[in-house]
Length: 162
Picture (cartoon, rainbow, N blue to C red):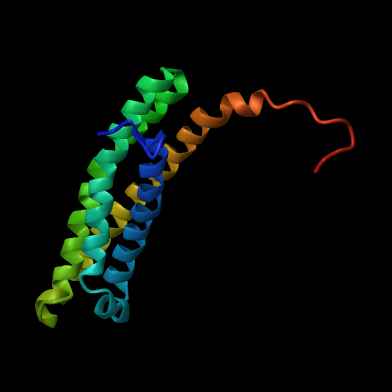
C-alpha cells in the first residue's frame, strides 16, 4: 500500500471514504431489514455498499500503520490503532447481515417471515457494533491528530470570543 496519494498521506484520504461508506452501509442494512419498500428499491445496493466498506476497512488500517511509521508512536495513536483493529470483525458481521437481509427479501413470504425476525435482530446488533466502533475510532483519531494543535493554540485576548 502506498504511503502517499497525490503527495498527501494515504490514510486520511482512505479513512474519509471508510467513514462515509461504513455508516451508509449500516443505515442501508437497517432500511433493508425493516422497510419493505426500501428493500424493493435498494436491491443489491445494500450488500455492495457493505462490501466496499468491508474492503476499505483493512485498507484504512494498513494506511494508518504506514502513517504511524511516518509520524511516530504516541499513546493516543496507539489507542486509535487498537480501536481500529476492532472494526474488521464488526464489518464482517455487517456484510454478512447485508447479504442475509438481501437474500431474505428475495425468498417466498413463508420462509422470509420466519427468518426475517432473527435477521433483523442480528442486523441491529451488527449496525450498533459497527456504529459505536466507528465513532470510538474517529474520536480517538481526532484526539491523536488535533490534541497537540489544540493545546498549542495561542490564547485569545479577553473579550474576543469569536
